[in-house]
Image (cartoon, rainbow, N blue to C red; front, side):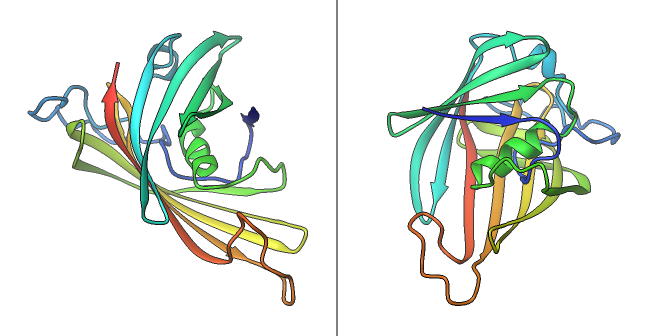
Amino acid sequence: MKKLILTGALAGAALLTGCSGLPGIPGLTGSAGAGAAGAPELKSLYTAGRKWEYNLTVLGTTDTMTMEVTEVKDNKATLKTTVKGSSSTSTIDLNDKDAFAKMSGAAGGAQTNAGASFKVGPVSNESITVPAGTYACLKTTSTSSQSQGGVTIDITSETWVNSGVGLVKALTTTKTALPAGLPAVPGMPGGEQKTTMELKSFK
């Protein structure tokens, strides 16, 4: 089982950012249009037993990904993420306003690295439709970059967040540059790779 700690400046960008200051948009009509555009209150949203189900698309293949809060302690929530029967855990700092953007970067393949740069970019209000319904969302673009062992990873993430649900959609673009002459490494393709998450259910 893999454990990933998401605290501090993590190289990532794409789930939610929780950084806005923009006025909320009233919840839209539809089966799941509750809440408004805006950053959710992490401490009230991330409670033990809360579960999200997403369609996760990587390299053209879509699978179901489940994220469940298994424990909340010392202002940190432990998430169990399951895809294809394989599980991993991650920890979200409930005091970190950029926690979701960092978490999204991890979904896009970023590694925890204290030397990584992280920047939250443009923010706007936007409504989107996903399998779970139509939501008024706060859209945020974030970027991160890190280099290790001659490998450079640049990530651009777009996240759509609803105040009553949390992450609704995330699109992460990862660009990996390998050193000249380095042979291909399994699981670490060079070039550009896109990862998409779309909310399927929430409870």
